[in-house]
Image (cartoon, rainbow, N blue to C red; front, side):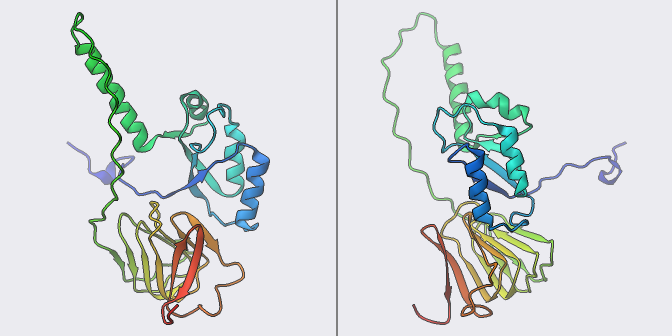
Length: 263
């Protein structure tokens, strides 16, 4: 007789987890510590125990040794919980796994794995005496195609309370009720709030820099577009607070503008 899910000691379900990318350009812990201190402004709960993927793809190839223990502890100091490493070289794999971190190779890793399997299969099936053809230049890779969002917008009609997190995966997020302090709203697309907006709003969570945040009455604690953050420790700009405004990414800067005046 099969057991009902409620009678099992554990259930496994699909869950959505949003992780911050910590992109390293240096392995010097002193320099990283100073940069994080400047970024957070000394705010102890800036990241609020977010998951983090350490991205080492931007480092020079000769950085084969990284003190992973020190790096993980340093991120933990700023309430970032490292769970995986992206862009690692094979020489780093053993040390990364020893620290209990996962290897996030992403699409590039999957493509390499498929190519390795295809090459091994071709070699195994090739006749022993068959002449080898002259090597042909590899075709130029096709340019990446922009992702299209087929999902409708996610609509939330109830207040988002402190400690709650709402994530619109692969689409825009529309909220018609208040977003309270301590709440977090996230969307892979744009965010629209037709009520007072407090808390934290993160648009373009999957990297879409064209995403925006729209609100009728904005007073957020933190906003982010495609991973670029801005906090408001000194308060939201007085001339734009509690009125229709939009937030977008201009270069590497968060721009806030009124939706009731022409620029």
